[in-house]
Image 1: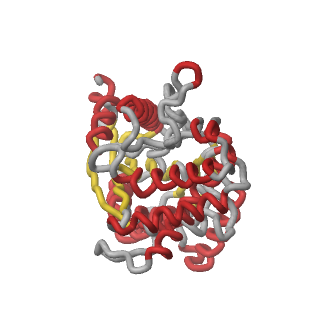
Image 2: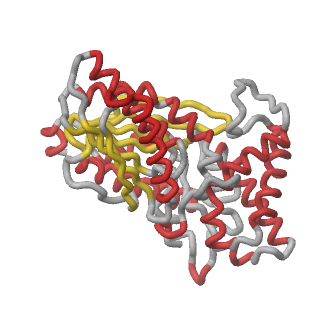
Length: 376
């Protein structure tokens, strides 16, 4: 599976597009606002003439421009309060080459037009460019970026963990597509090791690209206990069961299902911290953990689901916006309607056990002092 070619959100602006099904990710961006404000104000103390911002894993929906708006507003307000010259802002929007950059550029033009109409000549000058490529490697020249932002991305791995295919083509994970209660400890270990390799490479690359005094804010899915408990129970386990049902109906070949595993890992915070310490370049300045209802339209704090059918369909719809291209590349397009209909029904059945939630980590990182970084 070549992730660069097949992994991307559903593009465009249709009913199943990521642009119209990314409310859950929007909540994480809202939660990071205090972190973003603090980080930018610290960076602006250095009085940069040009402020370089990179959004890693930007996808192609409106959430990208919510982040841009937050950066522009903080810069505008801070410089106005201190009678400080506003820096020019260069935004780099990064994602894999298969991302719908065309839709992103169209939204960018509309966004800039709206800003100009709203602010007139007093707006903060900014420039937006697309940057295709994997963030699990270098993207920028050394010491060239002031602020990195990445939301809902780092739980996606650069590849399916190596080693899941055993001797003579035997699949260690069977018909499961992620870590499950039936998975061996070897499967969990392989996923953890792949996450560590990827996150180490991510941190190593950013440490070379980030300007001293710069900041990096990351938000991504995590977990608070064993790998087979939270995400799998309501998220990937139900999807695997839907695929197994299609195998029993003869719509999917069992060998096809055996050969499919998700390039995903929701880490423990301890695993995140240990990897940061292992890489050695960054200081974890702040962190926050919060829970979010898996139904993106459920804003309640209780554990009761009012309309299980509607809530399950909401979850299935946003999952489809994320996973459909990946699934189509392996199973073909013909089963998608049946698959996500079954997936919604599976979620609805299990909601009697409680409201499904996801755990989200927010990290604010900065480079250690130059002397410390050199001596690591």
